[in-house]
Image (cartoon, rainbow, N blue to C red):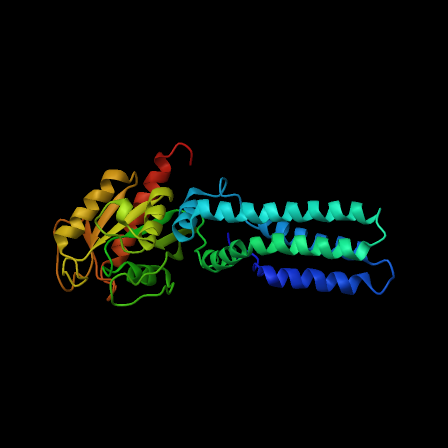
Length: 314
């Protein structure tokens, strides 16, 4: 969704480009001040307007992406910065039109052209911080995963280091960034697999902690966005061995917390069965060896098919 966002130039880069091209394109004609002003005004105004136009409407994007943007860069902040850039585009056009009118009645067009250039440059410089914000945000937004809301989806959740990324790798072959330390899944990983001519989507969420939403960090909020807005089934992975660094009772408390606010079917699976078992889980598996993974996947597909049959809008 955000792969084609353009690079935002700095205010000085934009000013230099506009005035340089205006001087070059106006040529060496005696009466070149008017065309120089017209060209510079168009370049500045059009570049800023086009930059704003490349961004999607944050009122109409899917809720999943809305919350990801909000967690990553702040939707309200993004609106403010885009609005200021849009304002600058309009103001520059007004200034250019105003001075072109004055120049047609004046004998000293060069003075008016220089005054207009000064005002347009001043307006452009006032949005320097906004352009820097947009460029920094672009780098983050371009890294967001592409999620298809129409595909049956398995959302993988649980504490850090319980085996979420390992499950995604085992099932889809996708290779997200993964390390043997807590809080290292720095984004939402997406993988796909096919079963009986149907394509499925698996989403590896960042580790969730057992605490209120208001106390979760940006990485955790990305997972919450996925859990809230993507239809499908949740695979909640437990680690009874405590190898992940979190006691089983804390993992179970988080499972109950998620069940209290998430209106999706949840399959609780104990991972690392080669190290420890937990009879209270729906199923068990070992993602490192592959034992039990096929059975877990079959149950998830069964739940998705059953949910789709029961959905009157499907």
